[in-house]
Image (cartoon, rainbow, N blue to C red; front, side, top):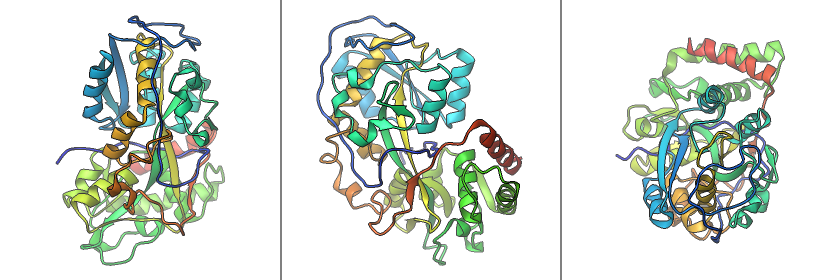
Length: 370
């Protein structure tokens, strides 16, 4: 089976509401075969027609079809490398002072962190020929007002899925996930401290980003009790483990759940009564990028609805780009994992924690993993 949809996600406050839509249109630009550019701010667009773009993205999160199509359409070679968490991406960019890659794909909150620390190039997405294709709700996002350092890629939700042929109980909550029935066997969870700790706080009735000792301890105790039931703490391969029956329950992103359900229809993606997180991933250019014109050409190319729709239909997530609604497959439009139920209003963005609050999360998560 093809390995797909194994990407790490962390939720943060996005300026959009849940639905299964996507989009975009257009093309254009000048001509330049050179890389480089102003590493502080670069709003001039010069369409490159040769060279290389080095993309650093989530594991198996960019279709090979688009790699080939980009080369055919633009003459630019696209090299793809992978990471498994926002924190891995952050560490790599800090170690290199923003060099080594031309385009990276941080989640919402990580865009804000990297930008505040001067690790991203300012280029103004609206200055791109296809910048007009960014949906209005995805333009003035909290983590990048006016899209000065990013363009939207894909968005979705994080919950858990389980095999109803094996687990006959009706699981409806995060409390059910952290206290799985014996029939579930060893459960999968993500190597993602914010997703895991926030889910534990949901289950125990705590507040996100809390510094309250009692709330943090309750989440820690829940995770400690859950640990003996955990088979893997890994954000990669979730889809495969559920689809092939290696695991019967795991925390998962909705796009990965959709694909796993295609292979194993008895799987069910849960909409917990405590709520789930909305998240968004984005294309950005590190400040140390060597091939800036090529990077901008890539971002502009991905803001074409026909190109973005390939990612949408392959990865099974939504996109904040105009025009892809019409290009979404009928399979996705009818998917219970992709289309949030009309009567479920608990899929919401989650505000990011500050450094002190994240330190508490790290302590809890490292204890859980240790």
